[in-house]
Image (tube, rainbow, N blue to C red):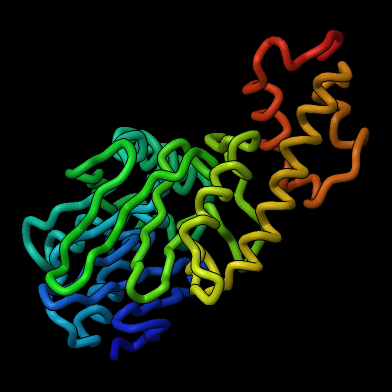
Length: 283
């Protein structure tokens, strides 16, 4: 098998790479492999390509991006170099945002002094070439792989990948294991918990869930994270309804995550509330 890949279920291999603790998954079928997410640079993806080849389960026939963030998409070009004109699948929102999101990351790395800056800056940004709005099924010959947009949460174009016959669900960054959920400037904190409700419907009681970062988890882990995300959403709604200003929201309630984790979530949540969900004063 690949140098980093571990088989977590029948012909479903997961590699966990130290940079960003990001997961790349290879799903095997009689017609070849689907690879889900491609790492954070051309250079990093070359190692992934080598590891995928070492699995020895056939050629890659398609790539899936679970969302547009660079640590999941910046290896796309490398996979095209390795296996030719592959279809790259993603939700339509994620595909539309990949280039702009990638350019912002390149600029941030250029100003950061991070040792990975050169490889990020030199990476070719390649968005998905095949998009969908709700669901798509990939045929791997003797198995079907389901791509599903369960709703917004970590981003506006999150996709989960279900391998029903193996009892595996790849959750992207809708589920995190090696850290708290990542609430960035493009998150939807008021919708995330409801999105996980749909995700949970796709997970068998004995199923395996592969998060975007960290070790595989079970259904109970996802349920616990959903509870915490629900607390975040309802706390934001309650504070806004009572007229608590956004600048005072952190101090005004008990939260399941640290302040630095929730800074963007609170602001985004207030901004995304309908007019009827707010009471003055809010400034």
